[in-house]
Length: 473
Image (cartoon, rainbow, N blue to C red):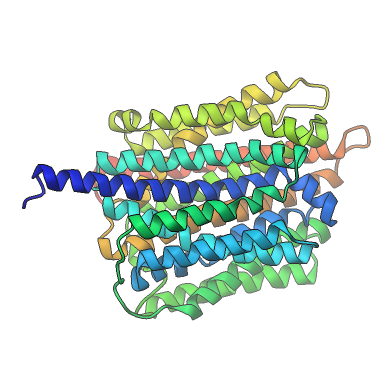
């Protein structure tokens, strides 16, 4: 029976729909969990006794583990079988969510967030590699990635709305506890819908995963610590230097490893390098936007958690609307041009939002700028994913998906860590007559806008020219 037979085409379409349902629901759960916590941060900090800069570790602990274990999770799917690894990651994610929802103190919450991030590190690349394997490169895959981007964009902003509602009307804990029944339904669906593949065999580079995670952990810890004690602190300097050294050692080991977590030949394509870098800058800007705009609405504009959560609704609507236009825009202008446009919208929105003050009204000072950010958020992720996954062999699909998600998560972690440092320094340097928190938020939003401009530059230098020439370098 040929691939053009109606029965074969119908079976393939049904399988694609099933995979897409599992992928989008799983990714939506992960993204919702990441963003729900942001609007709940003030309540978490007050309830468990976090310091202002220590509060960022509620997010950083998760995203750091997410990014650090991502390559291991991706390779585990390739070697052990994607269905088996997916189900294991789902169980890990759900159990950690229960512990977080019941956490009595900061230490328990942060430890469980690390475990939860490790579970997400298994789920995210496995689901993305399923998309790459089941949808052919070109318009078919672009449509799938557009829906993937819609889930990411809408999930991130919808999570902020739900987080505000949970924190204001119920409890921030609900946002974590709800993951358990959702994961249970996904587990049942995945066992029925996903094929029971046995993987390619081989060994897992556990040492490489440990080295890379410790390296990024040291780097980010040093950057966040500098916000409290400054850059001359001995522990800060040692953490950053050790982190960079471990990252360098990891790259050396990957060049020699028989089954590397990070196949270095993935970086032989100029467009993919540009997509990785642009994605990291995109997430650095967006995660920082979520963090600082939440502080702006609740602390500077004195909005309740519920009101602040609902304040992200305009962005949610525009994110969804923009993502639905992606297939047509990409077909007409190309992925690179659409990414450039996305960064332009985000940068303009962030610069506008940075002008907001305590005496301003929400709609003009916050709501309208968020519309611009929402458009950029909806336009960016789909094309960036397609660019990073193009010209990938099936045997490298898991590893390639892992690199995409590493850039995604570590870009957000490191970007926020750097801008939290800027935020703290701006608060200390604020004039007496100026609200210190407002001064810090303004500096943080300006920094996020610079990251978006950096993404435009990376796209203009690495992606657009290579696309026009049609070759690797």
